[in-house]
Figure 1 (cartoon, helix red, strand yellow):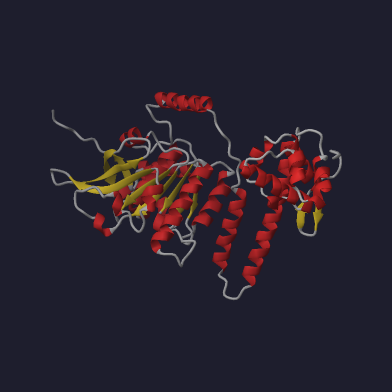
Figure 2 (cartoon, helix red, strand yellow):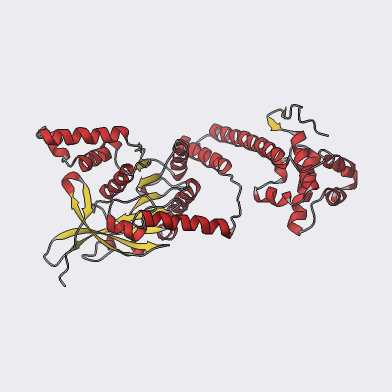
Length: 436
């Protein structure tokens, strides 16, 4: 029998493992085969076990589960080769009940994760020693390796009773906030279409060059900050200071040119000081490394999420460095798109990602099409919501901005007219007056 007072962790060389816990886990499953489903769902494999007999028994259990056979102690012991059958029986004698299944499972899984981490480190060390290896590629590969290990989560089945309660809670939340239960955009008619930005969603904001997509992303960021949300802003095109200049002008209502020329009125100076104080207390975290890959974005985001993170903004998709430089550009963008979607689902926060449109999207007075997304249809396919930012000329000949919700998985589509003040990089809703 296993003594719970004994020291459980033992180490052979650089291979952390715990023989008692391995036996305890397998014996718990043998006593109650229903636990095999939990172990399989959590990804247990024979590699989790260092002890040769335990590994053999685990492999038999996994094979039996796949074939639909029982995984009880007697059936599995008899399925093992005769030469090892007695030792298999001794494994199942390790515990009398399955009561400590979770305890043993956590120890065995943790030991396996340590061994997998050590193996990854050794592989990376060998690659780093190779002639011609690229440092940044190794860093990205390391990020991917460790992300795969750290993203291991146990799936849970949710009953319809739990789902309906959560669904009704969401509906009640919308009722209290004029239908908005997500992070607000700050543009009322846009929020009425989207109900705000929701966790796990990727919101793609697409536009041609010089239409104001960075300014629009700043507007969405500021709205989230005013709602006391924490935002991580990845600027792959501009430096942090350049983005902050736009945000400072937006919040203060004072053009940067006026600040630089030192011609501010006393009222404008007060507005700028208030805006500066707003940013001193805002939960805004900015990254301006223009050479980031999805792996590096994911690593930075996961680190920030441990402190509390409500939303991510990325400016912009096509500037994210591809993981595989040898792949076609369409494949590269597809991998980027899927990686960002996986990150949104993992962290359960909305990710607003800007994207460049093809030149063909410069059609006058016509909303860009989803097919105008540059270099890959995967951007549109993986996004939960696609907003097109474009310019339109009205009947009086005046040009104004429009944001069109062109795709939304769980909501309406539609057009929202905007006003844009370039001097302070500010978007506001445009009132459209219609004659009866």
